[in-house]
Image (cartoon, rainbow, N blue to C red; front, side, top):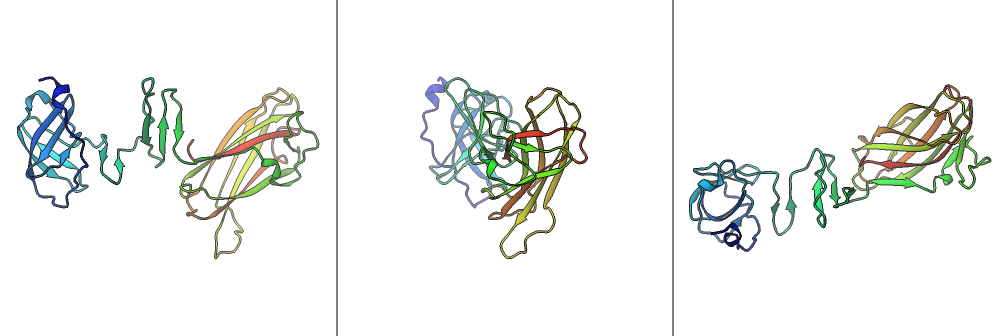
Length: 288
């Protein structure tokens, strides 16, 4: 009998019985590396019990010994060892469970997509174009950052037709704003990405500093940062040549519902680039 003729079972929900005692089960359908088993005296069918060893050593109708593990997953022992493959999905009438990934999966075949969880605890979708897309808000791009509070920073010499911000040389110019912490951001690592450019062909390093503050109900305004990062980038030596820079700060002290206040400073007093620079924009991200 061909596998396609064997696997004609109605998919049922996985029964995570509270009874962890060993039970017997009967092989109901086999298809390549997939085994469906029926628990004795039950209509429940368990799908996707991963097979270790030669699946041809098993036959439909064989009785195997099923043991529930502490996490509720079934483990089966038989002539050819069968055990739970935790990387394969388990479904129920209330959720769909699959193992989180440390690296993104390969690009799916044309016309298909992949839904997966990364080890950063975020759900992603990867289309057949190969682009991973977070399945929740994980990035904020500030195209309206010109409205940020600013000290020393001006727009008096915009990069026509772009209305960018100018950070002066020999000053500690900075900008700042606040935002309600998006759901799921608390405890994560925040990546701050800048797009800036020099105003001359001078070379030298530009020093940036990112400070974040946690603002919470029932507490005074903070007098010290929750996290900070200073980093430097070399000016490219070409006027208006855009540089993309990034740094990370920790949101480990934040909890759901907090307000995040962020300051971005150019340390023009101590850096080695002796001219003004322009900032076109920045983004905040916790998904890379």
